[in-house]
Image 1 (cartoon, rainbow, N blue to C red):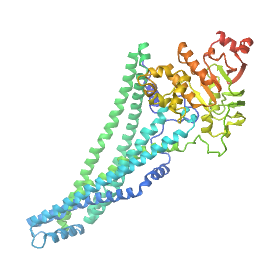
Image 2 (tube, rainbow, N blue to C red):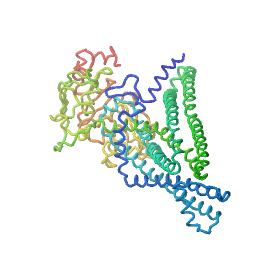
Image 3 (spheres, helix red, strand yellow):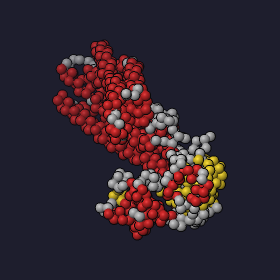
Image 4 (cartoon, rainbow, N blue to C red):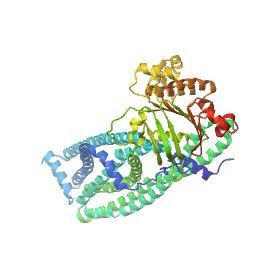
Length: 640
């Protein structure tokens, strides 16, 4: 039976926005709101990026003013043309020319000359009009081109800073946040900033300049008609606000419903095998129909309110236009207001509301971009992992490791490790066994300083690991993880990831040590074979052998093997173990094992339970004790 619609919507909306239904780990946070918390501060940060292109912005502003002014002047050039035609038809008519109309008429008349005809007058006026509009077109092109350069350069720098910051953040940051949430900073949030800089910002400033310019030209034409037009502004603003508020509400719910549909599709596509194995196709169809139906309803309301904005504002503008023309006709009769000026003013009146509408419609985009920018800047302001260089001499690490009374918890007040003490001398192999959640991987996380201890100390060669620079510390600790990760590139490049200055000969030698050389040579292009989709063209065992080769080429004196063979078959496991035995030689090694057969030859085995070491010793000692390890090894109890 299909699940409850409300529950489905909650789950998949949360999934699509990168929200953990469990509340997230330490530092996790819910999906971001649609409005910025501190718009002023965020704008200041954005301007710090845009401000690097002050000269370009100055040219953009000049081009924007030229574009607006030429549009307004071009429209005004119609006034003397219409008035001159009217006087030609009715020579005895008396008109009171406005100041702008007198200037335009004087310029045209001077070019035509005192003996020029009406036809020549009109041709010259149209030529001037064409020139003005061409200047406006050129200005608009320059404005768009330059602003595009500013926005793209700024966004490029923001993305670079964001990616650079991610490389400096601690593992705990990524552990406590879904990958989708982090990815959305590079996609949705940065894209919203781009749209705001390239489109919305220009529209807002251009609208403001147009509004001021139109109002100025209207006042110079006739102040009475200007007051009539301006009287309709509160009505425009109120209507735009009401429709915008309703539209924003329904667009928000539409996005939530769309997120739910996308989240459900993503999950069902990834889980097709499970769906087919358990014959849940029908249930999936029913659930999808519920979510899709909800999306249809919300899209209908959102698009309805979004669609009626134009017609309502347009009809309201027509009312303003009709009233303005009516009053203008009365002024023509009473004051000699020219027909040309009335024609031009009527055009200004019709377009007076457009900048107001454009600005109000762009504000939602601006707020969305500021909210996105705020989330981006929150990442940039997060505390970096790496310490400042201490300036101390970096000694050669041999590999003597000691943990003394170490306590640790991922969440404050909930400890995972309790009083862990152990040591490993150079070249020794220490194994950790225990059930899931016992704290095995946590110990190795502390050794790498992915996290820092709450209490107790960890030393390497007698030096607390906090006294080592983290980059230097990790150069001396190689890891082979259960979950292999291969990067897009050749086999050679993936092995070299363990040490970027490794030569081709060293890479081949590392592959031979790991037991990977033979299968690599059977690949189509050997070491130059390109790895696809995180190693999709390789078997699990082959991927793990490359991971081991990567650790081998690093030459780090300390090695961590985190359940490196748990996801492969027994035959492949033995092959991998041979490779691991070779790279463990002369290295201090910590092994986390799910299969106890892999730790029999360890110098010491630590049995963990609920974050405490409950047994320790080599294989024979622990078997003789007939405690927890003995029961695990003989199968009396099972590792879970």
